[in-house]
Length: 183
Image (tube, rainbow, N blue to C red; front, side):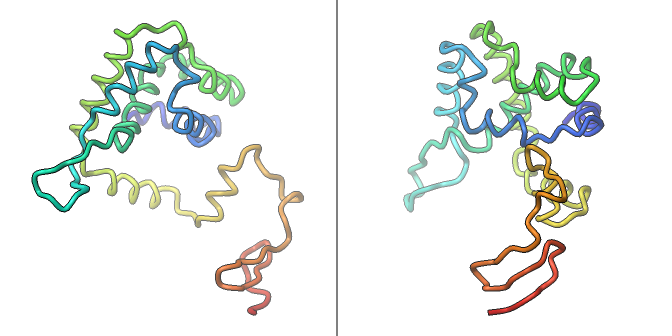
């Protein structure tokens, strides 16, 4: 949605997982005051999902914290964009994203945030899968490489285990992914 912001985060090595995990896991409770969190949740819970969850064609169930929540987080990033772009090193950017100045917001600011999220959801709805495919192509690395890149704190080569056992397939690999032994 914002290539300049994405490039800035990438320039300083800030991975989305390092700050967005708490946003998603805590449902923005730690970032907002109670009245704003309540307003946010009220909208999320009432957001109708287009998929049908029951066999009846007439019945639809509401699914609040589905894809709409991702757009809320994107909208939040966009809202603090200028403050992020002012930060000029890894520590400052990450510290800011983990401690957003949103505790003093009021419900009107949340309504603006939700409005932007709804516009983006309406605009991009159905294209999420293509965005993920494009992101994977852009990164051009394996799943284990992605885990190593996004691990916090960043792992040093020395601290990585020399081997691991894949329990589901009973194959032993070395640190480079080469097969050592099959059981």
